[in-house]
Structure formats: structure tokens, C-alpha cells
Amino acid sequence: MTSEQRTYVDTDRFRDALIRQSDVSGLEIRDCWFEERLKIVDCFGRDVYLAGDFGRVVVNDVDVTAYVEAELDRAEPNRVLAREAKTADEIRAAWAAIEETWAATVERVRALPEELLHERVDDEWSFIETLRHLLYASDKWLGNPVLEEDDPYNPLGYGPAGADETGLGLTVDADPSLDEVLAPRLARMDTMRAFVAGVTDAALDRLCARKPVGNDPEADYDVRRCLKVVLAEEAEHHRYAVRDLAALTSPG
Image (cartoon, rainbow, N blue to C red; front, side, top):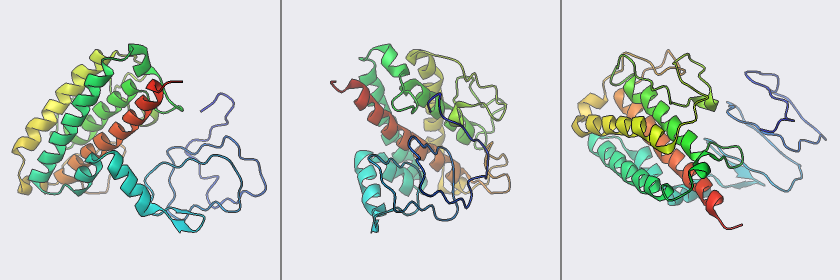
């Protein structure tokens, strides 16, 4: 987001809107949703970027949904493990692969200048912010509903859009080093490993008494659903991190 952009938050003013014959250069839609179709037709431009969880994507009458998913799975194979894991053994295998993948990536970034790890690419989260968000995600989906910890949230966690919207005591403006954020991050990963090591298929069906903060309070969340969110977050954000590291370290 640039300083010149007008920002709209928590508004429905664009629902069912029709924008015609207008210059929408620099338009950015972030962290929004649509239950019905989003349609862009008869427009002209040089650069279009889409990212999100879309059920179906059609570009110039060509359904590219399957192609995009296959390419994402090729780039980040752990996406498949996270998506398809249902049994306790499958969840254990997915988590082991995710830990191994992240360990290799962290080892690689230790050879980079520390300042690069705080740098954003195209206003996406930096590597440090990504680690902080994954800490928050595992606190939210494992520590709180599954383990029912008294104080599940680490202050270095980084919530959606980098905001402490739910009063969880997150120090959003913190600027930790790699080692400082890795300490609670690795501790939480150890907690996840220990839990999935002993979980059974029957235990995965247990409904959590606590609800994940910020999600539908009327929905049911069983242990399996919560663990799969952790797996998906880890896989997707690893893909983002590797993508941006490649941009930061590419010559020129």
C-alpha cells in the first residue's frame, strides 16, 4: 500500500458495484471476500496479479483453476500433504515434512544479511513477519483450542494484516531479530510435534471447547480441523517466503 492510496476497511460500499470506463491504476484489493462472482471484463492493462483462495478462476474464457493449483503444488509439495492429511499418521507425516522444509530454509537464510530478512517485497510480509505470523497461527489454532493453554499467545505473534485486532497482547510494532523470533517459533513447533506424535484418529474427532479467536463462533472446530489449518498455514507461507527470498537475492 502506498501513502497516496485511499484505504477502505470493513465496508460494503463496493458490494454489487459496477465500475465502468474508469482509471483503476494501482487498485489493490487485500484481505477481502466475495460469496458471489467477481467479474472483470472488457478491461485493458499491462499487469494483473491475483492471489487468494479462489474456487474457480477463468481468464479470457479459459478455466485456469486446475493449472494454477497444479503449479502451486509443484512449487510447494507440502501443500498436497497438508490438504490431503486426514488420519493421525497422515498429519504426522505432513508435519514432519513441513518441519524439515522450514529447517532447510532457515538454515539457508542464516547466510543472508539480517537486514534482508526484515525487507518486504511488493508490500508482502518480510521473512521475519512471516515467522511471526506462523507463531500466531499455531498459537491460535493449536495452543488455544486444542491444548487449551492458559496463555497461548506469544507477544511476538503477528496477526492478520499485522494488527492485534483481538486484544491478545501482541506487540505488533516489535522488530525482533531472526534468533529472537525463532526462539518461541521453534518452541511452538516442538509443541506441535509432541502433540501429533501421540494423537490418535479418535482424538482428531474431538470437538474443541474453545473457538479460534476471530472465526465463526457458531461453527464447530474439531482437533483435525484445527491441525489442518496449522499445516496449511505452514505450507502456504513457506511458499510465499521462498518466493520473496528469491526476489531479494536475485542479481539486479
